[in-house]
Image (tube, rainbow, N blue to C red; front, side, top):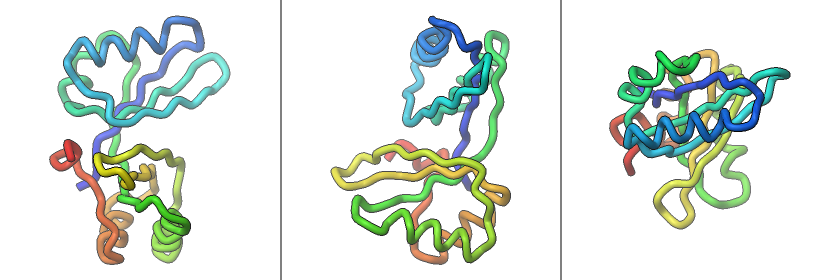
Length: 141
């Protein structure tokens, strides 16, 4: 099972990001990863948090927020590691809509996050190729 990503749609104005991050922090959730994309008058704050259901349920009254599943694949800190992952997805004809990365708990461990057209297939193909993926239960690693 993939991991849950929360996307908050914020007005492109000073203070919006700190308000969103503060709201997540006030709930006691840990921000594991985040990415910000700009789209004219608003921004999209994509987050992976330690308790996505709690954060979603508490923030949906305050923010325009969406919940979806993304694939997070483990990637070693070495040349060619990302290419191997991309090759697996390409061979499976998986379309990557966007991606970002975050570090893991080990000194040379990272994860690359993909929003893809077929989450289940992407995850199965990566695992069959020996590439570890995260789910909400093992995100705490």
